[in-house]
Length: 417
Ligand SMILES: [Zn+2]
Image (cartoon, rainbow, N blue to C red; front, side, top):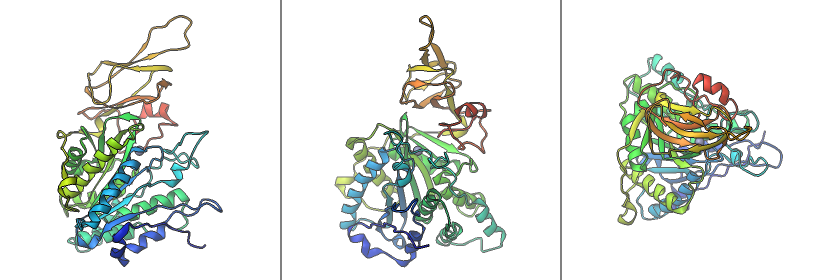
């Protein structure tokens, strides 16, 4: 089968830095889903991976989450300028739209980009996890002290060639390969209506808090090393986390990945995007990847975020259908037993009393619904608490199909992150 076109755009002067070592990534471009249709993922690279530390950023893996798409456009402009000024010390890779399949899925108008129309799969699940591959390397009595660079190469090799995959699987494979050899990997998402928050492995607690601090995200949610689900950032954290668990690298020496939730779906404007881009640059500078000139360096750090276990996140479900009216907004504290919202039934004979939606825990409201017409079992809010919840299975925290099986989720405690 002939190779499909792969668009790999390098900005400006950075094309001169292209090195053979990186070229294989382009072989794993998404296959054409149908005759006459070409998929492409653009990867802008600034600097050389050999020169220092490296950061990878992508946005839009959920095709209907758009804040990150605009943030990366702002970021690209700044990176181009920094590149011209010779301020890139290491390497920055930017994939400005990670999911052309999801972005093209329109159903009667709106983009429906969270789940694959082909099979209902969440586009941010079922990425490869590398624990067993890394453990096999360790069990094979290979030198326990391989360099970090050599381990990165192993991870890259472990992802394989990705032949004969579906277009969506090939796209995921390409994204994993583009990112796996970097030192920091950030996946930009958003929720429905939310404050900024971060998801990361609990093995990377300090670094996740640092990132949250730079991004002015009040909440960092930490997942166990084997939370399951195969989110994009878990390909990366599964590899490094296994080495961390084996005592080979410390948290600081390991690669770091995180999912950055840039508020809600409607939080797309130049003011927010420009600030978020500046924060990402400041964070990249803190990682030693680039040096900021004075006119780009001014970013006020937020408060140190609260780091909470993902097992303590309560997904509070709507008890009935109706219009939900919130008493609390994202960012506000909620008490256990507090009615944080009410549902107004619409189909009663007389004006019925409202149905309370009650928080099962003390915590902070992080996410709530954007559309207010709800049905039973739909998530009314994500409330982040400090104590692990008995009904949340730490190994199945991310296996959600909340758009499809919310009723089941309500009984299993699966997450809709
Ligand atoms: Zn998302």
